[in-house]
Length: 85
Image (cartoon, rainbow, N blue to C red; front, side, top):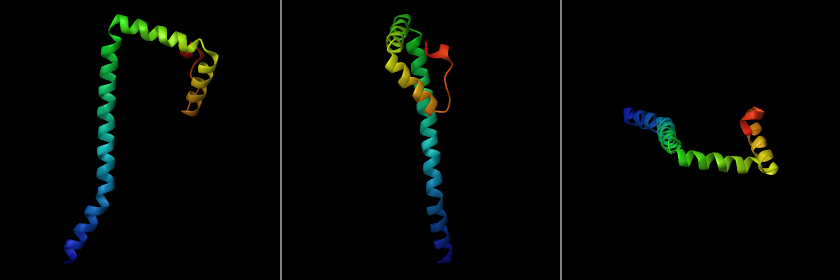
């Protein structure tokens, strides 16, 4: 009886760890898939050119630029000035 109770306690205590491990694994998988997709898309010259044009249009708007700079500060760092140009 005591052994069954101890096993139940251990099983219950390990569930949050298992959930965390599963979440971390899913995030790593999603990140890898996203990176692979980005690389495939950016290898297409037309898509790459379109993405660069969209970035230039967005960054030409002063309000958008301010919002991005504020976001970068909140995320833990100020981007280099040339990175947002």
